[in-house]
Length: 180
Image (cartoon, rainbow, N blue to C red; front, top):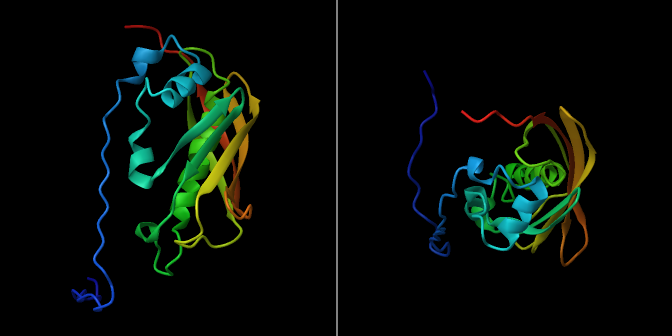
């Protein structure tokens, strides 16, 4: 049994109540795009012909550029992403890294082939604050084989150029499934 008690606290008078609303449209099933390569899917997202993943709307970041072995995401931070220390939660940085890393791998996959993250390594080198500005994360694929892929990425401030985090991934490459 927990000994913690939670009490509803009233906001301090100078703290404004904030709200954040986002909208998204669920995209069609990925099987609809099995004829496209990973890079083609990313370019279709950039062109607005395929819905971006709903995570982009939820966390306020999105794909801004992609090429062979490369994916770039950018996002805005704010106090809606705070952890208890009033800095941006590390999970936001991990998710931003995971997105760029995975899409860098995806950009080199043939049509019908998928991937999934099996290991994610994240190194946060300085805190991100609500006023830190726009963040840019560029993922670069290092190796994409038949069953395994690796990539690395960095999160830097667009305005200040500072390195905030870097990471790497290992992904399982998922062979195309036969049609049922």
